[in-house]
Image (cartoon, rainbow, N blue to C red; front, side):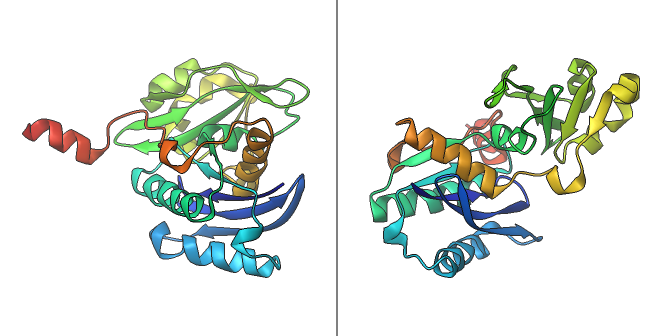
Length: 228
């Protein structure tokens, strides 16, 4: 199954293309520009470089959050447009699941933490069960202090929210490890593989049914509430 995946929940985003378990190609973007300016160009280049056309695809996968409200809207809108144009099913991949998926076979619990801005972080906890990373907590939006208070050693942390939590991590001692820099942010390739497995299990969605996973209201929604 050939699956194109989009990751735009953070400033470290991009696209990946897989055929079964084989990664055909990946384009990553880690630049201070909006994803809308580069994401579709990255998709076009990736598909062409792999010697394929969009009509060769069997499905799509997209990171649905939590994450940047603007980035998620761009990625999901792009996936929906492709899904409608090509009549393809779409797998909705939670961003924290994809981030935890960067550390398969981990021998201790893994906690991905993303910076949610406005004094909060997004996080959850996962454990390798011998086949996949299994989520043990709900998806949470907490203050960095409250998030750090939930953590217990041993644990491996990854994600751009670690810096916000660092003042409260000392109590965990050596039982708290931080993933290497190259593995700290979401990977389009992981989104692709998680999405492929979901699609093969019949868990694909029509484009109209894909929605972002927001753990709190956007700034626009908050403003609307204040003025209503």
